[in-house]
Amino acid sequence: MNMGGNKVFQLCSSGRSPWYRADGSTTESYVIGIAGGSGSGKTSVAERILKNLNVPWVVILSMDSFYNVLTPEQSALAHQCNFNFDVPSAFDYDLLFDCLQKLKQGKSVNVPIYNFSTHAREEKCTTIYGANVIIFEGIFALYDKKVRDLMDLKIFVDTDGDIRLARRLQRDVAERGRDIPGALSQYTRFVKPAFDEFIEPTVKYADVIIPRGLENAVAIDLITKHVQRQLHEKTTQLRWDLVKTSVGETLPREVVVLPATNQIRGIHTILRDKNTPRDEFVFYAERLSTLIAETGLSQLPHDKTTVTTPVGETYEGLKFNSEICGVSILRAGGTMEAGLRRVCSDVTIGKLLIQTNPNTGEPELHYCKLPSNVHKLHVLLMDATIGTGAAGLMALRVLLDHDVPEENITFLTYLAAPVGLNVIAKAFPRVKIVTSMVDPVLSRETLWIEPGIGNFGDRYFGTE
Image 1 (tube, one colour):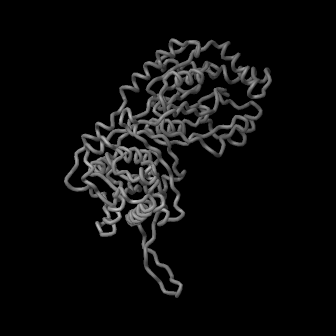
Image 2 (cartoon, rainbow, N blue to C red):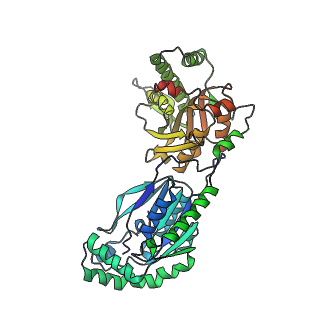
Image 3 (cartoon, rainbow, N blue to C red):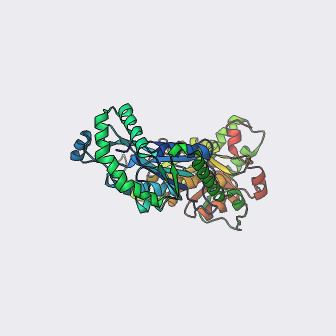
């Protein structure tokens, strides 16, 4: 069996900058494939490239995660060291291709965890989301054409056979508890024939061959610089695209604005008054968020139903035909959670932390925690304000990357600027937006220079 390691390593040292365009479409992640014989140093080369790149949101994905589920007969042979894991048929290429394709598209995936002791997949998986660069390594990384076609750069690590055998013996004895005769037997029966027949021929598909593996620092440095140039060329400048967004005279039809009743106008007067005490501000902010949440729920699909009252009468009413969850864009979106819980006391709420980079002006994703079944739910996305639409656009892209249907998202906000509403509606036309007020005073220039203006969250969290 290949001993390279069954692990997923992800580097997320800073916020993730936009991986999509102003129209909502994604830019594909950069995929590097690294192949080579068992013990050639593929994992070490992958980790060195990751370290040298010095960019956030890079993931190393091992092919060892995708071994097939064994039958009882195959499992018995595996425990006797008589099952051949060093052939292409030992891997689940359909699942492997699906995971790599989704990662390249920027989507969230669940990668299986393979237990080498039991020769079986564990019940839990490793969730990967947000990879700008994917480094995929394995003995058959370059074997399958569909998988190769996903790669932007293909590497073969060419290490002397004696060195590979010595490394494998050392790992088998030190890490797997095997004796030398058993390890040598497995090597001569399975590992070496597989390398000669299946692995070594894939060198012809490689764009770059690295002799001596990790020792070849010059080759690794050249590869790193090439990848950095490719990433620089793919960098998006979302903020400039948003500034160019045209604003129509009428609101997009997906926008629902609460009626300008005396209650709504009175609450907004209190919230905008700089002399309003904080306790009073919080009370009315939560009251307003409750009204917005109620309006948002009324936009969800309903089914007719008939119930029996306590006095035995029948009543024809309505009920939701789908489960819901809330997702807050932190910090300001947290101000709306109390109002949502007043309407739905047991609702699950996820969190997204999106902040503006002061140097670039771009939004960045720093934290993502969503319900595991979010793709099956109707999501109420919450933020205090929609200004340029940058944070909202990123949050919506995250939900779509987790397979939430666009029509299953309702955006709740206290206050919105016309430019932000148009940005979101053009990128994701099936998303509904519910706001208590559209404020034309928040001009494009004001929002761009002072992105925090009109932000209820600053006062709510006491950071003014």
